[in-house]
Amino acid sequence: MPHARNRNPSPIPEVTWDTGLKEMNETWKGAIACLGVAVFFVMTIGIIYWQVVDQPNKNWILRGTFSGLIWERKTHSLLIQTLTEDKTYVEIDVGNVGNPDIEIPFVRNLCWLNKTEFCYTWDSVAEVKISLEANEDTETECYSMTWAPVHCHVELKDCFSMANISWYGGASVRGQTWPINDQNATMQPFIVSDLKDNPSGFGSALERYFLGSSGVAVLVSPDIPLQLGLDSRQQFCLQSLPSMERLPLQYTVCVAHNVKAAHQEAVQQLSEHSRELPNMKALRLPFWKLLANMDSGPKVEREMRTFSNRLKRHQLGEGVISLNEHSTTLLSDMDHDYLNSRKRGMSKRLTRDLPLVKLLNISITMSPFLGVDTTQFHTSLIDGTEAYWLSLPSAPQGQLIPVMSQWRGKFCVKLNITNPGAVSWFLDRVGALQTHLGMEYIMLEGGEGNLFEEQALRPPQALGGDKYISLLADLATRIGDSTIMTAGTRSSYKPLFVRMTPLQSDWSPMGLKAIIPNLLHHTLLGYNFLIPDAVALCLETWSQMRSCSSAGWRLQPFFLL
Image (cartoon, rainbow, N blue to C red; front, side, top):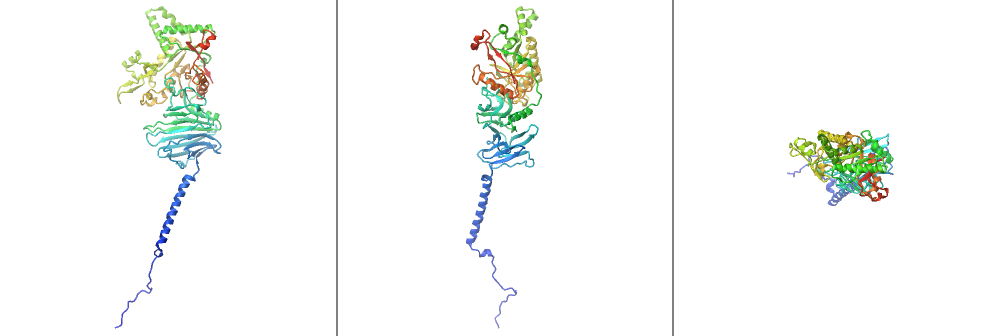
């Protein structure tokens, strides 16, 4: 039987099939893998180099018609320069936002659809929004900047460089300089304070306005708490207060071709009301200030009579005799005794004092403070008018308890100027003094500072920051156009006079040398009608003028620009 063979039914011959990959040996496989890793590594290095090294140091954020806002990543600064970059208006250091040790490579605009706005979230710490507004009539461009913290208790601070720029404005200080580049001030609340109690604070005239010689003006929002610090010849810094409310840092920077145009634009934004003039008659009169301390009304009246005779003897003409608060109280008490004696038909000697007081042109001094040992305060506690004084509730729905403080060495309470009844009571008190003493001029002092913040208490919303001094200025305008304030903020348009910060009786920067810088500072902020501190003058003989430091009276002139 023949041997049988297996036959392939398919017409295709049998062959051995394998892919090209199987034909490659292990050496080629490793080479391709290494090449892929190298390409990926080179691409990564290239991207990092493009983002960090090859990127320009400056990035244009916004462009106007003649200026633009630039981000300088190495110094963490915002620059406002001309479009040709040949002039820098201002440099703003924002390096403390987020982590200043981390270099931010570029800034991406989240509001790119709007060519006049810039939005960005800064290192998950703060959101910044910048808007550009141009004024073709005045040829100015304003950049409104708002920094809003993303989290609670975030401290925001922007610093404005003094390099090649002279800065003016802000607040008056002890030893005023012009410009403010030579001043030093630790970071502190930007509110008016009494320089007698706080020599390193801010006093007299204060506005949230700074003017730079390069043609730049900085205006800070008036409705947010603010801190200010000055580093001599280096920078001044604006800082927000860290809190649970996530308070923003908000300000506007306006630039112009010259400093005059920048100032005029700032004045238009600051002047929300038309300007009213005070009693111009006061500008023609010297003010004579009583320095001696008396312990009774008759002694005050006798000193006034003696001084009036000296004025006539030296033919110095008419003037205003200025009394401090203590002398005013003594005179008002004497007047009260006089009225009571007239009713009882007693003491004819007192009847000859009051008419002479009324014949003199005097200026009295009052304050919103009231001693806790006075009858008026005790009466207010009895008749339920304790709300006339700045108070805090003892519990969420508890009784109001007046907040005590010290004024002129005595424990006092302070007038609640937001209470209409308290304001009416104070105006009635002023009206009574005007009737009894016949004075024309009134000086209001004691509005400086914030009673709540000084005692680490949370102030009511209506009395935060410098709002008390602003409300006191409103009260002063109701008294009359011959009222003098010892400090002013946001009230330059009102018909009031402002007194300069008291100076030393020497030629030092703390004394007479500071009069002209103070004068320039006040007028720049809009306080054109002001009273400098008193100048010593002796009235016995002109040859004794060099030894008049013990004299009881001083000549106090007015300045007007």
